[in-house]
Image 1 (cartoon, one colour):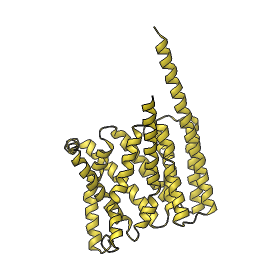
Image 2 (cartoon, rainbow, N blue to C red):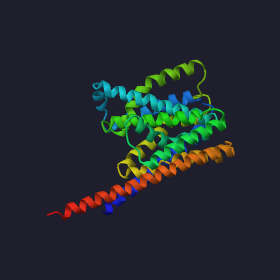
Image 3 (tube, helix red, strand yellow):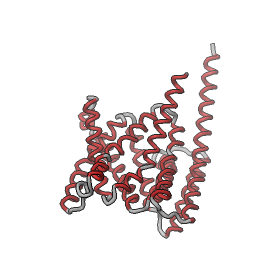
Image 4 (tube, rainbow, N blue to C red):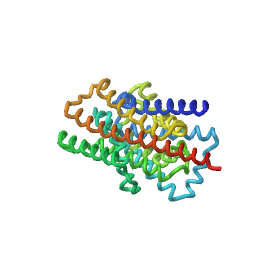
Length: 313
């Protein structure tokens, strides 16, 4: 019992740290200016591959690559996942370096709602009444923000859709690969594109890797750690804590992103946008409350079933 509680506490700490680091990423990407989104994406892919490749080589776990190549359908799914997460990274980095980190934060607030909606549309899942209400309130928030802004919040929608679809695809892949193997495979697929992109940017004189000082170069090299570190912490957390806990912890990321944008990056948030965020938060409170309530009911049902089974001769 004590060991189980210790594992849960450790997993919660890992999860908190993972979402905290993801939430603080606007500060990292802002520090990379004047590097553009494409250069940052290329370095992020290549240095992540170097870091994970070295780690897997030391652990002698590179054999999964051969198995992946022999399974074309799985390889195609991994390639699609890599393109989706690259799209997400590009939109996010472009938003931060262009001073629109608040819109990026909104995207990650919307992500749980879009994930639930995709579950209905793609997986034919049935929603509980409170979940339907949360999705409807989230849709109202998007309409309100579109009217207020004069156009749909494309950055927010793009981030939420790309990450939710990425999560759906990862769900379809299941446990065929570990988190480290999966990210390595995705970056391997993206690496040739990233290398070509970096060559093109270099030929055009649009790179900053060697022109902005040693500190800037070191920050770009650290893109591998910045990308892989939180993912590994998340994977460690997901093995130790209930899904409901992970679902509640994920709200740390957009809250921190928003605070970083407003308090540290001096982005302006008009009152009307705060109202839009408030509507989204109402939806998230509904979703989180429903998740906690459903988890408690399921736990009670399991305990009752176990007690009935134990009482039977």
